[in-house]
Image 1 (cartoon, helix red, strand yellow):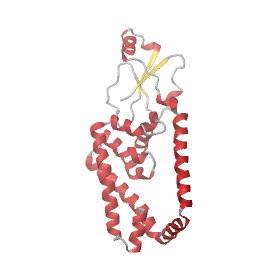
Image 2 (spheres, rainbow, N blue to C red):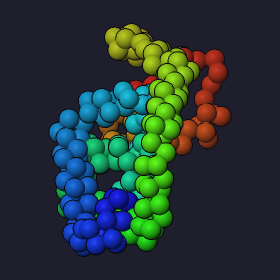
Image 3 (tube, rainbow, N blue to C red):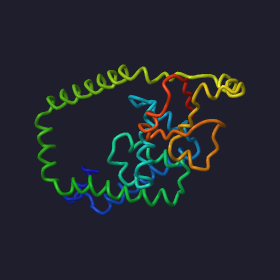
Image 4 (cartoon, one colour):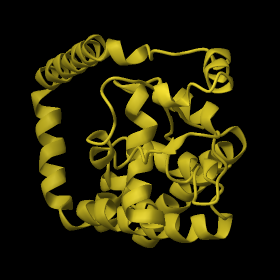
Length: 236
């Protein structure tokens, strides 16, 4: 987009067409993953989160933005790494109306295109100097880029190793919890519904005897939870 904006300013490309093409490309991509999210739900979100450093909180952090900002998240999502990938499929999985999605996503795409293509348009002279400098530096730039790629791969490996504990979530068999409920042992443990915002509303059905914990606002609830009981969590 920055290069396209610079090309538009230099007269190599027609600036309004650059803007229109950037907008159409983003909307087509977002609409595609929105429909995938609508029909595939959590399986798609889980797949996308496999490339995340911490898959267990990947979806939750994106859902947290919807929880705090609502649908306007789509307007700013493209400016936030991680959320930019998850926002459209998450909106689809939450069954947001297509017309509503397009309205907010279009607004976000316009802002994003204006920001980056506009940057290239305004500073095309400066970009030209940088490109010329890269061409002059030649092999030095290649070595710097190679070191940057190696450093990034090393960083991802370090993140993966640091967060490896979160890739294994302690689980209990459904049958065991059902047996304990049937044996009238609910006073001996806590059963909590932690479905993310968008998958839970005030009228949603819960497992009998369970309590509701909002996963995006856990701090107040943590002080009230007992320390001497098992706590079972269930989500979507």
